[in-house]
Length: 178
Image (cartoon, rainbow, N blue to C red; front, side):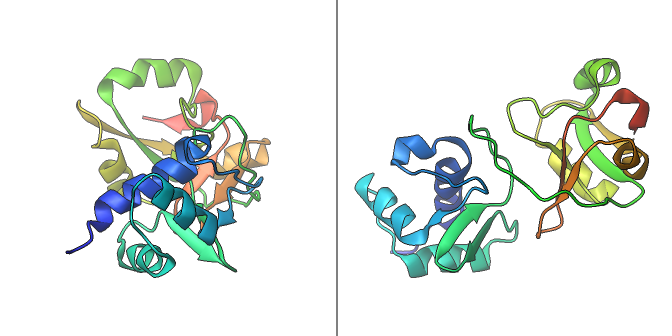
């Protein structure tokens, strides 16, 4: 029987990003849990996996949403848990991009970029990647250019993930170009 790695990735993301308590997992302050604890939790829920299967899923995933290090696993970003996942601040490039839809534009230009149901605002290094992210929502795609360096110099915190995604705290409208 062939493993559906896409479905397994979604399940692992659910456990590590959104509802660790459903799986009886406790994320540390950087979002890590023991890989063996995740395997046990998934098997308890009837999802038959072992550590090697999860490692293979991560290696074959083009999206690189998870990381394994020293026997632990975490989701890079996208957390909606109440407990804030701590990140290390980093100086961003001059500009980053955010893909959204036309119907969200007025709210963004009024309130700024907010994390919504996540812990951080998600940003991309280039317009193409921002377009891929923004096109997940139904509606006319809009790519916003963020003056990230200026925002950073004015105390907006940015965080670089190892897979190339940038995260930030809320970004005021004065740093957003439409």
